Image (cartoon, rainbow, N blue to C red; front, side, top):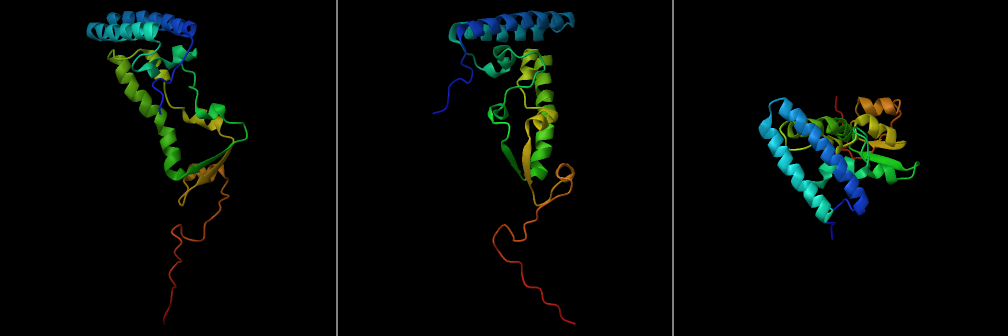
Length: 185
C-alpha cells in the first residue's frame, strides 16, 4: 500500500510553512502585477490560496511537493533531501550502464528547472516550487564516495574518474562463447 501523502508534519511545522508560503505569495504577486501580468497574478493567487487553505485544514494539498522547501524549512536554493542522506558514509554505489546514466543525472537539474521556470513565470507555481528538484550534478558528486561504474562502453567521465583503470569482462553477457575464427590462405 503506497502512502497517500509524503509530507507528514506536526501542525506547528505546517503553520510555519504556511506563513512562509503566504509571504512568498505576496512578494510574487507584487512582482507579477508590477510587470503587468494580471492574469498570471490572479491564477497564482487562486491556486496558492486554495493550497494554503487545504494545508491549514487538512495538513496536505494536491501538489504538496511544490511546497517542499517551506515544509522542510530549507533556505532557497538548498539541495533537497534524497535517499543518499540516509545511507551510511561508506556505502557503495553501483551505476549500471553508466555511459547513459551519468549524462542523464547531469541533465536532470536543467531539464526540471526549465519546465518549472515556465510554470513560475506564468503564475502556475510559486518560486519555491523550483526547490523541489533533482540534485545538481555537483551535489550528486558530493554524495557519492565509493562508486563502481558498469558499462561496456565507458564514457570520458568514467575513464577520468577511474584514471583509466578498467576491468574488462572477457565473456559475453549472454553466456555465449565467441565464435571460432578460422583463417585460410
